[in-house]
Image (cartoon, rainbow, N blue to C red; front, side, top):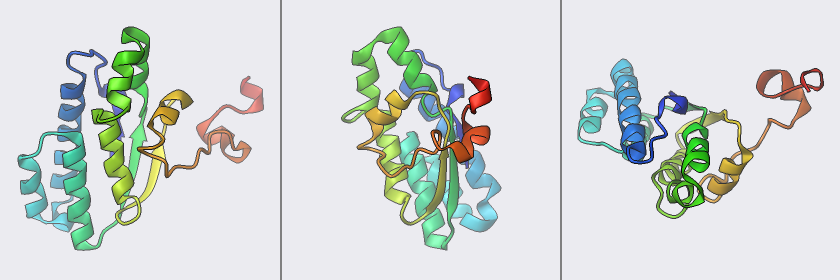
Amino acid sequence: MTLNFSSVTANMERLEETFNTYCKIVMDGFAERNAHLLGQEAVEKLRGLNTGAALLGSLCQSAQNKGYKMYLILNEYDNFANNILVDYGNERYHSITHGNGFFRGFLKVVKDYSNSVIERIFLTGVSPVTMDDLTSGFNIADNYSSNSAFNNMIGFNEMDT
């Protein structure tokens, strides 16, 4: 499943709503396309859920119940968080990435299922600051962006600088 968070609007007043709506659209579509594997009950369970964390948790539970694994791609995971930091400042940024912030809660679900259902996770983003702030909620990752073996794939190589 691929989530591209550059699609999430960084308007602070509607951020959580936009995030959840985006997750709902993508995850409903994922469940419908994979109903032959997950079962129609997985699609039905999502209908009553409205937060990204709850939707992802339900999908992972359905996959786990059927014995399937998932690959999760989070593209531009830090896009809206970086925009919030720049446009609204530290206090608003911390409200989504610390404590009970909705984005931190979403990544806790990723972490919860990383040992059972989510086989691989690929995150792309630009700011190590956001990852650092989310670390205790998502401390299961290895940062390959500074590994020279992967520079041409996920980072800049010496010729790009």
